[in-house]
Amino acid sequence: MSEPRPRGIGLIAVTIIVGLLLDLIPLPRAIEAFWPPWALLVLVYWSLAMPSRVGVGVAWIVGLVQDVLQGTLLGAHAIAFALAAYLTIQVYQRMRAVPIWQQAITVLMLLLIVRLILLWVRELMGAGGLSWQFWMPAVTGTIAWPLVFFVLRSLRRRYQVS
Image 1 (cartoon, one colour):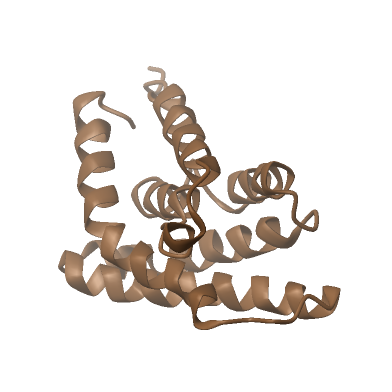
Image 2: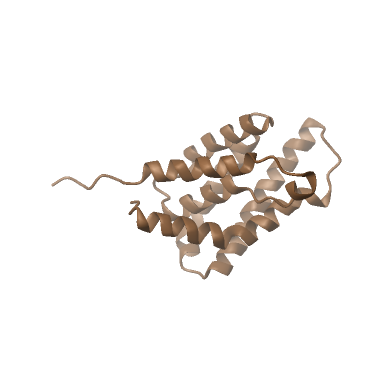
């Protein structure tokens, strides 16, 4: 007897692409600092929901695409996203067992780690002039986590992604 084929790779890809596109929306400078890192939040969700299908390799590729789309140093987002996916996979069983507000705290830690890596890359490049706004995507991403979680979970259940 054969095992059932995994389903939903198209939905996973579409949601990641939507996350990348949301990150590309041109925004006024005042709003841009408060825009959550949508692609990263989508990656964290899929790493949490399907760690065997969306892992470090997928996160690395999405990070490289993010670097190209945003014109940042090639590999900066890739290493940050890969580390976030790795850490998510390491704690996914514990994250699944806690309420959404506790998941949001873990997501905040992941987003802060990603921001620290991006800060480190900025400093290596000599791009100083950092303000408090650099850290705001981690805060707004944490606030957006319940929305991302519930929307993607409902899509995963509706389309029976396995």
